[in-house]
Image 1 (tube, rainbow, N blue to C red):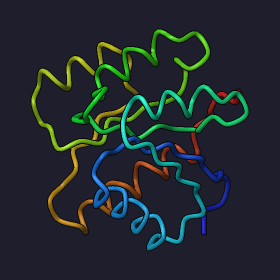
Image 2: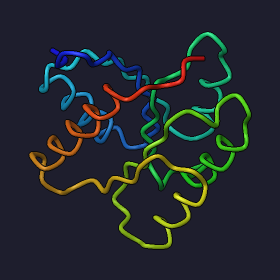
Image 3: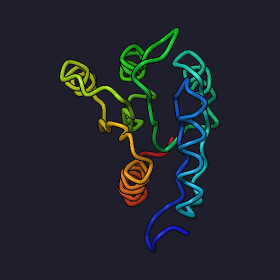
Image 4: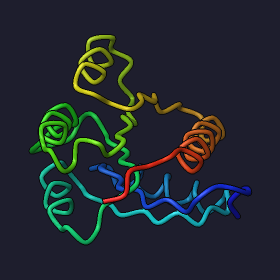
Length: 141
């Protein structure tokens, strides 16, 4: 159940690791959140999803290291698109490399979250992240 004055989010998770996809879905379920999660396995698939004018996510959770189109490449394309550049995009990654962090913020990322190794820590971070975006004012397309 969502806390009072929060909204149900539509989340686009761009992640090529099936275990990470299941982990996020399990976390949302364990927190009893009513958010909808769409999954794209890479940046190219995500761009195809976003081309549909009828469906836009409230937020994007983006992995950094993916085949075909990595997170930085995807972010660069997204932020250069006049219709999509306002979608809040949060990097959800294992990379603690300062170069990655700086490049993502240079391109306009809304947040950079390092995936913790411990599941309980992961759940705590995801809970805080989703609570924040559920109370934030978001642009509707």
